[in-house]
Image (cartoon, rainbow, N blue to C red; front, side):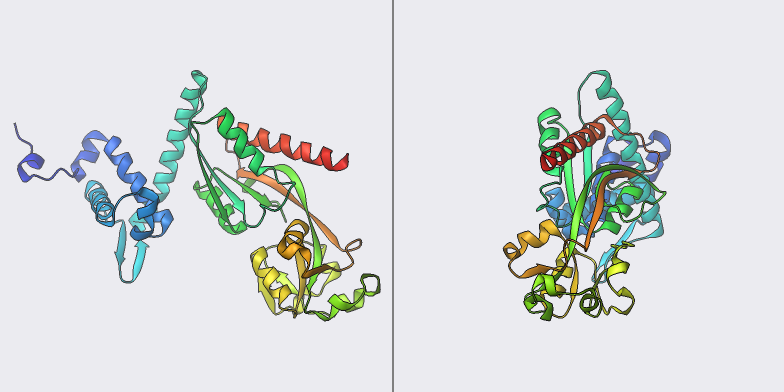
Length: 326
């Protein structure tokens, strides 16, 4: 007996199928496409990620909308936007795939195999920090669990925190300026920052031992927007700053303009132009140690893969600390 679908020639699932059969393999495929499109910010941007054409993506999203009987997004000249139904569906996707990952992890543990995904958010401009254990840990994950899919995202602190909370990121490697109750923190190491001026700034030509705190306090300062160290306020007047930056690279550009002084990680400043265009100001007296930690959503159990990754990070960080002390 022919079904209504076979008579019409339409192979797309219908709304009634959801009620009769629940979520199937075809639905999971469509939902993964939808999730990728949302996280890429639109159909065109998702083409490279999915390695399929624009028409195919459009068709699959349309099939998903027919399947669920809801308009999930709008796309056109105005851009890509989620509808309210789309926002609910996206969050449900995150919950669903997280549950699938946990289920798969438990099965793999039972047969002593490691599969799954690690979506890691890392803060930008940390590759020059020799104390960072991330590269070693990624290498160890590949050696010990080669079937694990690893995705690395370098972005801003607030974006990493949002991603960990909404389930887009498994974890984040971040500087901790103030612990927040929404997260569990696993300490790794400390990053040292100094106060710098550029080679065009008046303080650059003054001998290091001759620079005074009064000269520093009277200089125009870059306010590193999210780096809210209480120690910074003892050295500089941030309340009157008219230069604000978020990323480390943006801070360095303002410093190199010759108009401002500001804090930069020591490893980054030494790497930039070999350190030739940046000068630390009173480095023995003015320095800040920022703890770096692995963060996960509060109360989330660590999967076997994430535990392996965390152990690799902590072991390498400890090794680096002992090496520096020796």
